[in-house]
Image 1: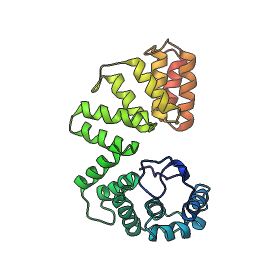
Image 2 (image 1 turned 120 degrees about the vertical axis):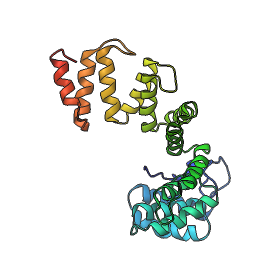
Image 3 (image 1 turned 90 degrees about the horizontal axis):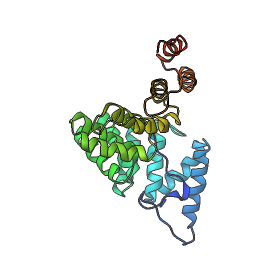
Length: 251
């Protein structure tokens, strides 16, 4: 599962994750939080942690989330599921949607708490409704497992439109196969390209096959070859054989 950071002034640092626009001068603690975030973003985790912990203990949700994240991934502190869970719980209580997403992972995997899949999906649903793309993807996957394709595509699209490459790839597959949507090669190409820009090797490989077949675009073997070489570089296991077949006119 991908970790999520709360960057500087892009969100209400000491409120919820919904973001805020204000002309109110920043408080000293907000300035300290921003400096700590700069350190954390630069990989200077240990230097950032004392400020995060102090602010978290003062009740600031953004700092509580960052401390949870640090202990979750062992950045600047020893990895500790129990502390991460506790800090995520604090941030969740204050409405931090990204904390809900990570807390859902803990419940789903049974880390630092008893495994509770239902609670995981309840948390992911709240995070998804607040706009967290990874949570939206998880909800889409849940609906796919229940064969509720309409709801699955709805959440998959929301996640894909926010730039989550895994959602973009799977939405492309859905359009290519006509799974929950009308088959549409042009839309499949669109979402494969979005995922490919984030170096999703499966998207690059499938896009190569579509380029060679002229599906959703003009037939373009040269473009297909370029894509297959890129997929090879990224480690796609079928790319080398496909490239050889293309060069021999057998793809």
